[in-house]
Amino acid sequence: MPLHWEKELSRSDAQVRTNGWPVPYIRLTQSGHGADTQTWFRNTFFAGLPWVPGYFGDHVVEQTLVTFDVQMPGQLSRSRQLMVTHNEDRAETGKSTPNTWIHWDDATRDELRANNYAGHRIVLNRSNNGLFSLAIT
Image (cartoon, rainbow, N blue to C red):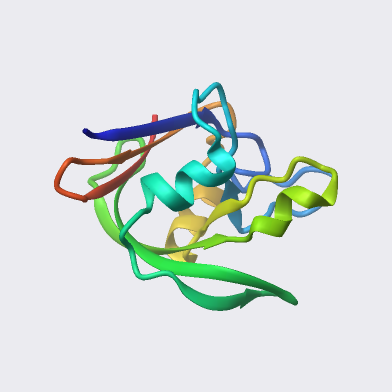
């Protein structure tokens, strides 16, 4: 069965400067999804990928590289390899921080910064044959 998730991009997700700096990743939140997304992304959406131990800053994480077909508005799709990290302890900070994040590569981050996609939707899909897509709509 194909898998699907989407949410509206915040200014920070879309790499638009706010009072602070935009974060170089997108937090994979509940966003109306019926499953427990704290575990769903790691155990279902990205299941079967080679997760390995790693670090994000000072924090121990599990990480994997995922090849996405990335589609931005008005552009041809491009294949991009993005790092995905998962840390069970992120949610324990008392801030309901999502456990799984997709980290923008330089090219995707630059495209986001060059265009204000705040308020647009990000759509993730995993096809039946295990191919991943990421679209900004």
